[in-house]
Length: 324
Image (cartoon, one colour):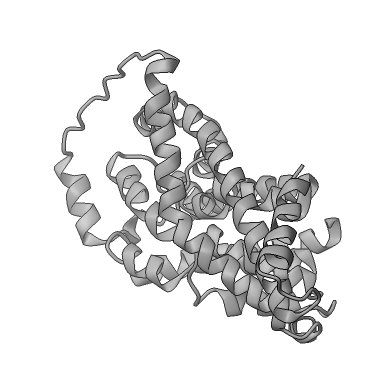
């Protein structure tokens, strides 16, 4: 499908720039040109189609539906699905999480959204399809949704509402009357300009992260010794997956920035499951996210949230390595 992009990258690097093939510089630049164009094209197309879904399934409708219906546990799954189709990193998911709490959505359901939203979105899916193929993408996406569903359910069963911050408690006590969402019925063609603008805005918003991430990946791809990552994370020892997750938790990146790096990890010998676990911990848990969550959670609740999600990601990493 993308052979023409590879041919363009080869022509640009080897013919136009006249860089000798098989050199570190040529390998890095070829990787950078090809992956940048491929990811940007996939990203716009998938974000465009997700924009169509979002246009007909707004946040307010989800809030009202979850509050009205008895879902028998499916609310966690639906919240994870909604998280998967929203293009947010861990930090940008926090404002929506706050809105869910203020809107009266059960805490466990809001956690399902918060867990899944940075892990699985059109940005990551677009990049995964191009880099790892359809099978790995489906496993990654489905497992991310399941992780959010189970993680939210577990956190919901712990009755953690008392551990919300005083700021949130005061807001809930005031029972501020929510403005009822008034749906404006528009035709598809009336929605289309807004959807295109939204897709373009998302691409522009993550463009710099894509460039930085692919640039890092290109340098690693061209210059890092073949066995560098394999030495630390490439083995089958039981501790490689927990090590990958624990090392990743203090870091911060969104999917656009980390997926190209993961591609290089795999190329250098790191098992795909271990690499995906590293990515999930990087995009799903971060110090900036914890700082933002301090507004709505106590430190104990943040620690519980991070602990549960870390454990789920480690388990997922083991399963990925078995399946993939």
